[in-house]
View 1 (cartoon, rainbow, N blue to C red):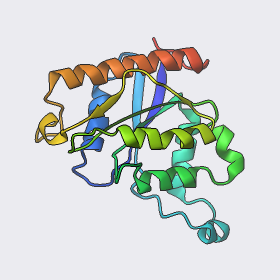
View 2 (view 1 turned 45 degrees about the vertical axis):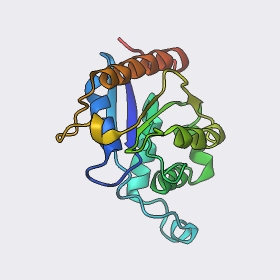
View 3 (view 1 turned 90 degrees about the horizontal axis):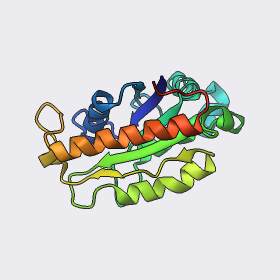
Length: 191
């Protein structure tokens, strides 16, 4: 059994990326559990705040959850052809202090998926994440990509994916990621 942390990079309650993450939880293969974590309560990074007050509780909880997990699923919007600032801010906080990076991120399998109302999917956001993931020492999974275009036509009013081909693609993506975790994370076992 493997457990991964899933984080949506959008704060909006009606976010398509958060809906995609909820669908991923439902479509995860047997033996893979996705625990949804929120970045909503992570403050803007401020070195003065860190020096005076330490690591905020929401950040500490995220770090501890990720350190205990077998992998990370980043469900990323694409803002202005790049990654979302609130998501990068959460990752930046999680690297504090720098000595914690190996414990939290080192060697951890990571996968990216995302959706956008536009036609380009989230390809550029995925590319923008790669140097960050490399710097953190993570192991990105490069299986069949999931970056969903035209989100308004893909998700129903209840947030469920209504397009069968996309549901199948998400399920295939998660199965591949589970297999990758089983190969690269020795403590993870997908039953």
